[in-house]
Image (cartoon, rainbow, N blue to C red; front, side, top):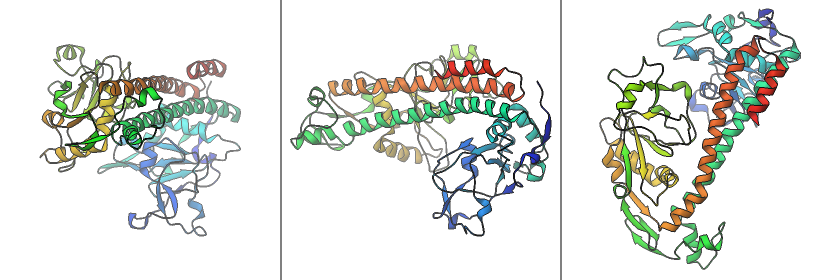
Length: 452
């Protein structure tokens, strides 16, 4: 099935428009404004925290966004970013957009904006955009006058609606999985902070109260008083030690001489750019080493529930450490790390969940930033990690924490793998749905099975 093509501008309810210019010095009050950062970070823009800018509502009504508005990047430092499309799906308050964006408002009675959002995210859509990209010194960009003249398909409104509904269903499910993961991580992080930073159970018992949120058996694992230590007041009987005493693995991997730029398959190699948070991985940035090289690596092969620490890079004098954890086949069943990442494991009775949240704790982050920022090339070495002060609770408390936290961690990995499956399904279906090459009933079954 093929569809008639028309000028993109023929779909508009009103002419395309560039956004507002507001210097940073006037920002901080007013209405939210979609910037380039939001567009590149979120293909579907909904209920985000944004810069606030002052607006003359009477004179600048034309700059407010409506649900379904399509936004295109006028400029980008990279070719792939020029003309990138996002869709505005609403915000808690009225929202405007900045001058580096082009807004296209479709006649929604005749054309489904979600369908055309997905069209411009498809390979065919990118091709029509790349045909109008102008490359200059250090940047690429598009003009609104060229954008309105690109050719777009015009299937029936009913077909547009059905395709858009299917793709939106997949994206909504992916969004829900990510939001669920954020909630699960927040629960685990709050538990760690309560037990091992704020010492809430110990404080409650010291005041003669029952600790909140735990049964009597768990409460009995905690002491009821504090004692002085290198770290200040800590629960009585808990030790302060160097991390070196408890590390079972602290190593980096490596890459072949000449780098990995020309290697398109093999074994995935995890670099610093992929160390974000647990359950997060940008597959578009995947790099590889050859299988032969990987088999000869003496260190750096990932094991399930390894904690990964970004170890070097950044502006002189500034080091911003990041921590992640991979496991249960996420993001890959088999992969390694390069020389810019530490793979870390602690000895029992410490769990990898404890290690992950300990490294993210404010005190450890502060220490790593301090140590890494002093280096000529920002970063930390093995000694910096080994010298960290580690609070050692009693074994039963550590076991109790792991019993509560590990199921949350495993659910995060499970959700992340399902999100990856749905993303692959969407990206496989997208070009064929946009071009009419698939029968909708068959696709509906595939989506239902994937979302089950």
